[in-house]
Amino acid sequence: MERESVPVGRLLGFHVSTDAEEFRVRFYRLGKELSFVAESGPYPGVPAAPPPHPDGVPEHASPAVDWNWPPYQYVVPDDWRPGIYLAQFVEEQRDFEAQRDVDEQRDVDEQRDVERAEHRARSVPLLDDAHIEGFEREFFVVRPRRAGATGARILYKKSTYTRHAYNRADRADVQRAASLYDNPVHRPAGPDGPCGHRLSLHRPGGVIDLAYWDAPFIAWLERGGYLVEYCTDLDLHEDPGLLSSYRLLLSVGHDEYWSAAMRDHVADFVRGGGNVAFLSANTCWWRVHPVDANSAFVSDTDHHVGEEYPHLPATDQWWPAPPDGVGEPENALTGVSFRNGGMWPGEWPGDRPREGYRVQHADHWVYEGTGLRDGSDGGPADALGAGTPLIGYECDGAAFARDADGVAYATGVDGTPESFLILGIYLLDPVHEDFHHLKWGHWNCPVREAAITGPRAATMGLYTAGGTVFTAGTTDWPVVCGRELDAGVVRVTRNVLDRLSGAGPATPER
Image 1: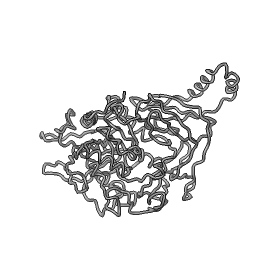
Image 2: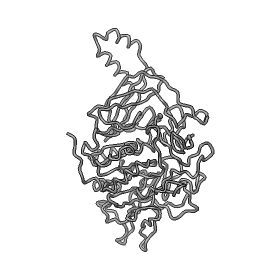
Image 3: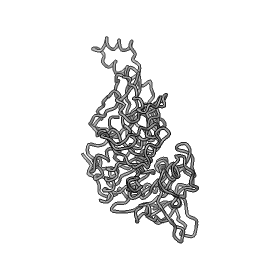
Image 4: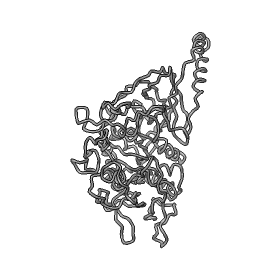
């Protein structure tokens, strides 16, 4: 996509390379189910080669530059509802005999041309909820002309920078392996950006994370009657006033890469009384620097280039003090950090323990209506999400200790706000050995610590500092809630959304 969000009535730009003679684009909206909304085309197909890797990596394309595929446009209709939309690209071969017939009769039977085109397009079945993931697909956000125009108090931020970091630019039959993790491109500081790995947002790929985290949770939101508007990371980066139209910002799933402007805008929002629900983890772990008119970003991370680490320490990690990092611990905003959490070994999304969060402070409003106990009545403490893969695939935590009754509390030594209240905890034990050849690997993340500084635990909780910030502490919270795998998780999510979105209505646009 030229840009991953577009207001209604504006041009959606997209870039396509195909050796088919023509193609069509089908548009769907994610809601209670995947709904077909329109079809556009046919467009003439034009093939384009991927850019070679600048470091000469054979059989792999460059993740660092705009692929400059042929451009096409579509005007988003005024009556499209705000939401996340899926574009499916359908290749066609022209039926020359049928086309000749149409050309001969164009003046007397224009409808025949339309019918033939529709027949060819319908030879490929429409997508459904089970087929959101795949190649020949791309997603984009549709926004109202004015933020909050629908009356929505909730803004759902799609974590697009993280999506691009992991996008390998593959296609169904070719593994190009071009991403921030696969054959990345690291460049020194210069006129086109700071030192770091360079990544273009104008590359092909497909749809994976949207199907896993977002689709089930968006369906749940709409089944529950929540009125929501949507944005991308770039929208939040560019517009300091975007959040002022809402009461609650949602971060969902895997939200690893943040620009400084994004973080500043959210922090200002909270200080001014706005609320955030981080139904996510590995959140705000790396800083990114948008470049090339915001069509690419640079991030100095610890990812390999070949067999080497091109620059250590990686200075775009948020928590370490300068000059080894940014010096702004992510948990000062979120309450938790991947530094004190972990990642399950093996393939994504992977298997993992299904013990859930040990409940604390069961009388808190977050637990209202769940019936869960914390052991203060003399019985055993319950576990939120027990029996489901709630904890992981990646999870965040806060540095903690335990009081005389064994209740965990945040110490704040890692930057977690003093008012942070731990409501659920799952001890990550044992710590796995690293596979990144840095201290503690991805269990305790590639950090610069001489030793483990304390126990690691996935942590659910909240704090208030102007507004209220809730954190689920796990990437897979929206999956468990969206698929309604645990009644307690569903009720806690409702409590959070209802409480934190419940004031300061926006005025609907008539």
